[in-house]
Length: 299
Image (cartoon, rainbow, N blue to C red; front, side):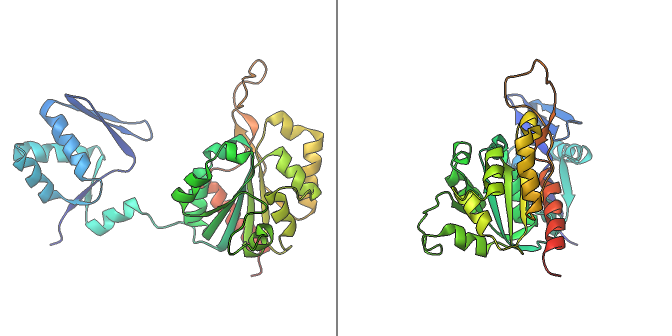
């Protein structure tokens, strides 16, 4: 008979005080609080069950620390009943922490170009989703305004991806021409979140920063996807729309903007969400990119 393991549910969070321990679900539909002796036991169970842990070994450890065996089992059973604690075989519980990707990576090399659009400051979930479910390898370009919102070293260490910022960046593989090397390396280019300024540069082939240079050098058969992100009035501006039309006509894919909240303090006339944010959530962006690649790359 296989040994039974316990694992804390990834969707719950624990908080504790001197005489209390509580658990809150990520969906906001549950809160369980323990007090006195049970609070300490619940904290111990939560601590040890960060990875699959043998149930009987956990009970024995709690008993060795002075807890009554019946009380230990009661707390574990309560946590299980509330779905705070998962119980089962080790290999099954391990899959809960590292679920198999629903979308098989279909892009070998993805180049993401991040701009000074404010959403760049909170773009990590998108990058994580793309790297885990869409592409095999990921590299990032940051424009100068984007570097005011994002720390290159943070992305480098968190994602283990190469970061490029400078037109004249000198690395072994780029040979002083990163835009040429990156455009040939990429299987797909994603410019997102894309500011109005970056869209203008791409539409008119300005080639005055690393993003517009790289897009201009990208072969026609490589998909280029642009995800605009800006104030709703900027998005509706005739000049911005003309630039977007130019990008579409040149064969670039556009992710139509979705709802988001204004970043400015102006609220007198425009409260609530407005169209202008990046038009996809992390999981949706993965599927959207997969659909685009399937349509453009040779079958």
